[in-house]
Image 1 (tube, one colour):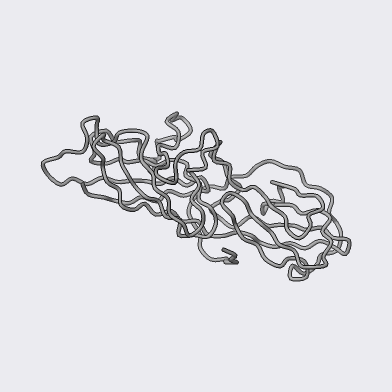
Image 2 (cartoon, helix red, strand yellow; image 1 turned 60 degrees about the vertical axis):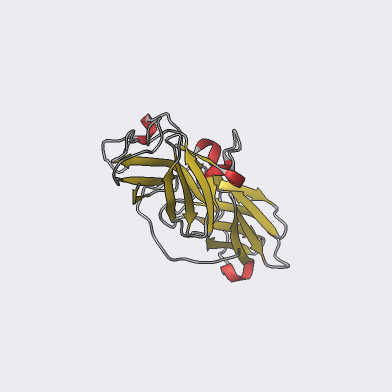
Length: 242
């Protein structure tokens, strides 16, 4: 879906990829003269240029003018990879730094391409093997990359609570903690199942057993917490009962 939206913020840290800044000291052009539209497709950003505009170079940049990706001589559109699930990395961040810069013979135009990302966990239930079955909805318009899903609190085998300041996710070697199910089955080693496109929903199950090896049998209602860590920054936590 083609959208241009500049609302919404999420708490988190900024993820940057080192790059070099070229020498683009020519005259600025109005973005509406060069850019027609942009949208996100799964793990890519697609930028459309206006008819008749000869773009020499298109670059994906951060606010700090660090270059993430470059396309030489794009015709009509330019595509930039922004999500890399095989390494749990993304150019998308929790604040709006991303922009595209297009160099033409008549000057350089720049356009912000930031979009909102917000993941919601729904319908979490234990299965007979002690895993958690759940769905994740991306209510934003840019692709959500899952870094880690933690089921913790009052469960037999809780995972680490990522909201605890003493927990360092980089020191855990359990991976993202979930795999896609159904039509969203895991694609190894690409792990495309970890990407939830904008305004879409995907099904998952935990790769660990938070409810114990004997399944989820319990004599009384108990409650727990599920936390979704987004690779773009921010942790969204939700309570559940079982």
